[in-house]
Image (cartoon, rainbow, N blue to C red; front, side):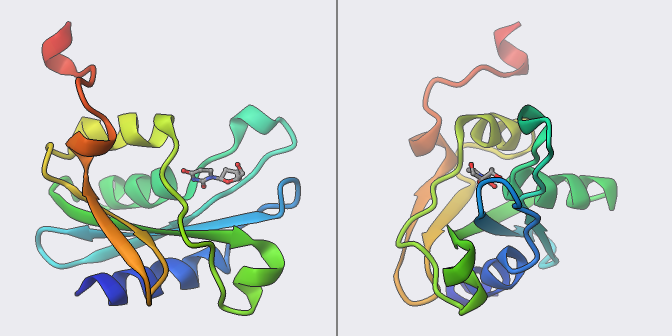
Length: 138
Ligand code: THU
């Protein structure tokens, strides 16, 4: 699956976001090294900090299904009314907690695809989370 297809899957997932508080919908599509794709959306909660981001939802679904080897993640976000019509923000970079969550399972070369199906950029996890804390830091 190429970047455009992964971003399209992320946009589809964003339409399933549960975001009654922020009205900001995020979708993520995670590609495993075996070629499978797991999607996730943000799931908000009345207790705001209990909210799950799209990226962690996708990663949790994949890990729960037995996957641990990941190649790339595509992230798409935008206001509810835009996402409903298939339009996304130019960029929806992953939050710090999600970057840290990715670092638990993904190496420095893990690809993070940010943008829309027609305009995107690809970064590596080490670019977005340099000098990170991990198991070797303890
Ligand atoms: N959100 C994500 O799903 N992923 C991120 O990396 C950034 C933020 C969600 C959380 C919340 O539901 C909404 O976007 C606004 O912060």
